[in-house]
Image (cartoon, rainbow, N blue to C red; front, side):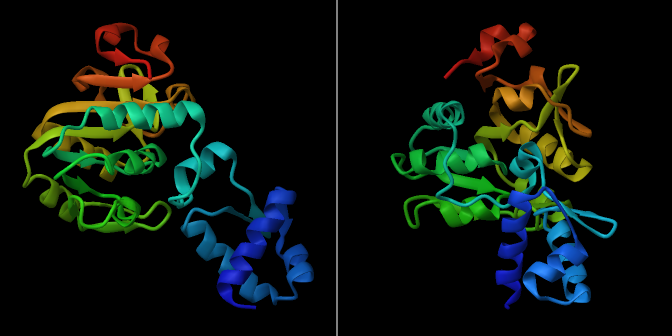
Length: 246
């Protein structure tokens, strides 16, 4: 069995049973325990599952949304799609824009087919592969790769992002805390901060599931956002004049 086939089989088994030991996986897949331990370690680093002592656990839906690589054909919920569509409507033909890494941003790609002559800077390698070829100018930042969601961060990404003046920067929301947009790493927060400084306007995409969460690092004050697109306006009591409900 090839490695990609083993990975798919492991995920399929974890969908049925949320925890499996190495011994259980070995018995069902007819693969040695040592091979499975290497597989589980690699899958954990890439964000497909949670490695535990002696086995592996499936991600919760919230963890999966944050960490697993998303596929272009993956369907958004009606609320998420409405946010993505409304965010795309902020973009004008000929704009210079920044788009960060998230499932919602990927969902915007289909709506960008209607736009003309955009210059898009992004740290999302997935988005670079999803956008229609030849229709827009795409600038993909370099930097340190986060394999769990195919994004880049770090000093090289910041240096690249700082070279441009954006009419609009669109950020996704991992969580909220005391008036701050939160994210999962200091590297991501630094990139967001530098991009926000270079943008004429800044927009936040925040579905209800994210508004109800807090992640580890404060990235940007909500007060810096010129537009907030959300289906949970009650989480932004001090910014009602900037909230758009799709």
